[in-house]
Image (cartoon, rainbow, N blue to C red):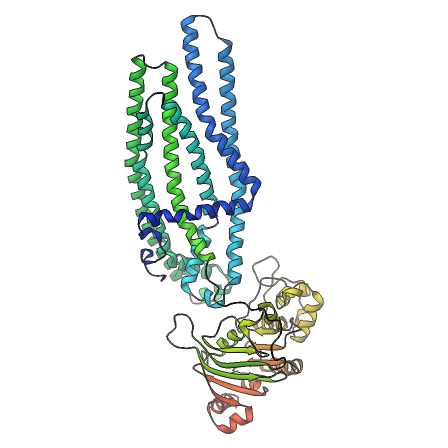
Length: 614
């Protein structure tokens, strides 16, 4: 499904299918009921019981009302005063009405409690699913459309579907009891009661499908609007927005998207309500025609005044029950359509399998890339092609190349964030796809160039490098010492417990270099990692701090494998082996001295950078 395509063109879109496929969307009803049952069984049982009570009692109230009216008429004609039986009937009707009110209140209360629990449960399901997906999924615009649709509606739709299902049951029970009473007047009254509501039902179902198609079609616009909100209201973008005076321009785009979406909503709403009103007149006309029929039958003496009162009340309430039932069915159809978004997201396939290996087939063999190539989804050419490397324990490797040459992509493949399009990557003789993901991640410590700056305390920012020791202050301090962050952390009020970032109270911001030292410390949290990867780790540091970092880094990685990406050749030259990548291919390999002697691309880049310091 292309994000920009009309939803009707999607093979998974139900609205363009025949009626058999329309009915197929109701398959989510069972799953929604199971989801609500799993969320809270006691509340679901209370909701079911209250629905049954609220469905049965209205017909009982109408029947008792008939007995009261007929009893009053009989008492007036007899002139015997107020019979005791009428007092008991009034009391009984009062109890029935109290039961109806109690049932409705119980329904409202359980729905409110279930709404909170179910919303949380569905959101957790969405987030748990996100943890199982690969980085490539998050870089796919179609996946983001799925995620946006799921998050916008899915937390409310399961409960809405269940509420409508129970509402349909309640109205069905009421309607059956009303129909039983109306049969005493005429079977035609029952037929009129049901048939008069059908035109409005078909109209609602049609416009529910239209609304869903519109919802799917405009998912990209909705995401774009959310993005503009983020840019206009986040502190990390506020500097440039203000400096470049982008605010009015971006805000106007935000308004334009809203105006376009509003025009579509308005057009659909007006059509839906106009047709709903017009077709609703059919039901109104049917009621008053039946009203006149019942009145004439009463005047003719065929039924009593109490029966007339009961039949009119039953027909009016029955008509409301039919309308509510048909509206519930239409709403259930709409809810099922929206739930298809949730389950379409939850059923997103996991693109990389998870192995179970806890150790390699050849311990100590190190890291190998064998004919590795990779192409991003939707790209026309490979980002990496024919990569062959071998890095042994105790050795360091530097990756050099222009921006976009494929260096960071190679690291993401190594981390298991992507699967190679062809070739394989081995750690200690075992393919990465065969490793247990938790074991593999513990063996690798990585700092990406675009590392996260968590709005958390200093220590937890460091502890994020190893969730097993997330709150271990001793480990924080040791990692900070190795990452050379210890000195500046000790000068911050609150030290390791100081809040970082500006989102929360008493938060403080660090300089770029300080953040990079925190990220370095984060990598050293994994004491068992035997492969350390630094992707431009000192880009925000001055030359002196960088030299100190890498001298320190060499001493800490003496018995480990280390991979370094940097544009500073004063740093790169420290590596045992240097690989030059250009347009996804390895074009040169060797030590610093060997590559200078060769006089190739590396030597050219080195001399260009050296000239800048002369």
